[in-house]
Image (cartoon, rainbow, N blue to C red):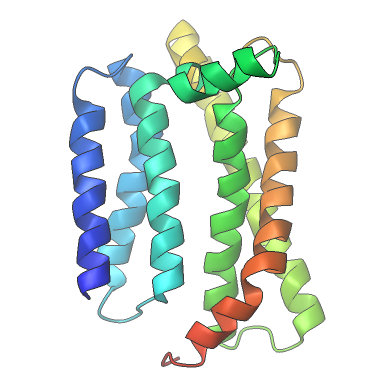
Length: 200
């Protein structure tokens, strides 16, 4: 519990920082909303279903990425401006980190839910379904970005974050796909050890 309280305190401090003079308040609300909604779901379901500490740590980092992106907008995060200049990139690629994590973290959440609830028992199918879930979440998010951009006009450009790249949507989904696969390849064994100590 102390670990979870520490993560919440750090996230609260980051949220307060992010809310002070963000680049655009409209974009800030759009970017931070998924983190807030996710945290509310976790709080309401905490007594009935507690994730492993690994999952809470991953969710913390995912929320942090959303909150930082909300403060600066995804196209203007200073560290990734520096990366752009150092590595001669044509754009700020912070959004690609965000979409990589958008595949990485939901894949691990799906893995934990499917295993602990015994939804799928065959490992081969488990991996396939997890990646499909991560891709579905990524595609739904792209549809939301598209809808917000149409609804808000120029106000949604910072949220969309294409930066003039015509293949932005497709590459976002690709990064989520890669993120999901990397998560399963690198964290499954560690995750299994923590799952062995959990109640279903």
